[in-house]
Amino acid sequence: MGTPGQLNQLYSEGKLDIGAMSAHFLLASGDFEVIPTLSISSQNEVGSVFFYSKLPLNRLSMQDSVIGVPVSSATSICLLKILLTEELGFCPQFVYGKDPSLDDSRFDAVLMIGDAALDFDEALKKRSAEALGQLHRFDMGSWWRRHYGLPMVFGLWGARRSYYQASFDDFQTIAELLGDCWRRGLGEKFNQVLDEAVRRTGLDRSLLQEYFRDQLEYDFEEQHIKSLALFEQLAEKHKLLVV
Image (cartoon, rainbow, N blue to C red):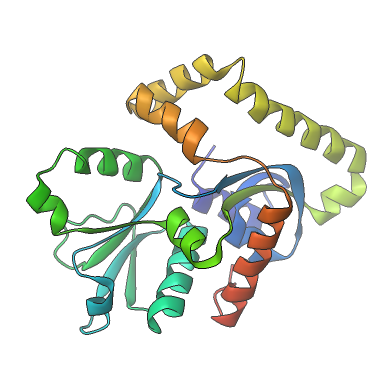
């Protein structure tokens, strides 16, 4: 168990051979075989990766803007750098921290991911229209889809190539089990999944139900492969594929 950043570090140190990892790490490492039976993706809104800006995007380039980003997600940070650079031709200064907040006066904008993003965005809906109008909100899955017409692949499961070559039968068995796991988790076991998610996060059950069933996507099909290849191409273009 761990954040994407923590898991990526363990793979880098050779302490893990197989498991979940960020799409960015898998591409940058070059030492892992994709387990092709599941992913953490979104067709449109992902619901848990948001870019919030106190300024319109075009104004971020007109001053020495600073963006707060979490150290726990290489893929989302890379994605934000790609989209800002491709759309605006620039990328402001990034400051890394645990959970950057808009309340921090240093930041003109922040990237939020995971439970913190789910919680903040839900609270945001309860604010006044005036407060909402002063904040510019971008769901990163939707932003990618709007530009490229493809799902965004945030996370994957992979196995170190040495493990894959030495234990191919085990790799195949694990791949089948993982594919079955997410289908059962969305089907007959879904209430148990929600119970556990509420216990771990403290988030509203109906919010989590929408998140797991309507926003996240778990397939890894042709369109996901194509999207991952495009993400790799753009990351290489902007020299962002560094472990």
